[in-house]
Image (cartoon, rainbow, N blue to C red; front, side):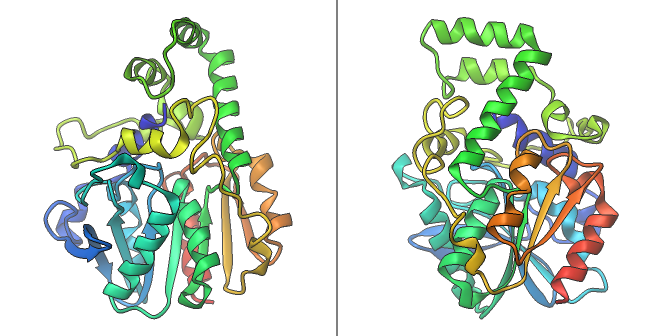
Length: 321
């Protein structure tokens, strides 16, 4: 099911007009040797380094290039990268190599390789799991932490699945009925046939306030390589992770550690987010009371698309602290 999250977002958000002003994700990146693998990066702008950590798990970076304009006339340098197993970076020989801790370790080694002392980290959706873990483990190297439509624990991720399934059952009963027939036959989340059924639900239904903003206009464009690694996704959430979250995602929990963070923290939520659901988002006010919390009232899972100007202003103001 989660394939539609990354595919739809990347296609709708990444505009090729960037190629005229900014580096091209296909051709203008740099590889770094990180923990025995090659990690692909694209850097935009000059100034304060801000690492953009994509969602998924399994998503590549191009959908986030909508943030490029943040660097114009600002002291901001955006570092986009394809984490291990995604995009143009190397993939694992053994699928068990994909873990949250591996993503955190790779981010730290990438920071060192790029010769930064302190970095800001912006993690969106699954990327927030890596960003929070990194800030907890390496606080001395984090200038700012941005948790964008993120998850604080395995319980919140399970709620993501439960709520998504509830919404589909109520509003797309024909899809739900087909899925239930398949499950009675023994098929589970990681099976392609189940993923195909989930893909009948429009992206905008669960993830947008205004679905029109996410209708693809990029059918003629070439696809970015390995834009979403499905095998990685189900390795990290579990074989039946659209119903019961297990493995890495089924055990992470930052709730007790967030209050101890000393760097500036920004938590971004969307009122119409049916994945990182608002009633779980507002619990960040309890777990991380020192954070600035902003609810975008006219957005779903991607305020950077739906309320772009306000999102930009928020990030610029926050990063100036």
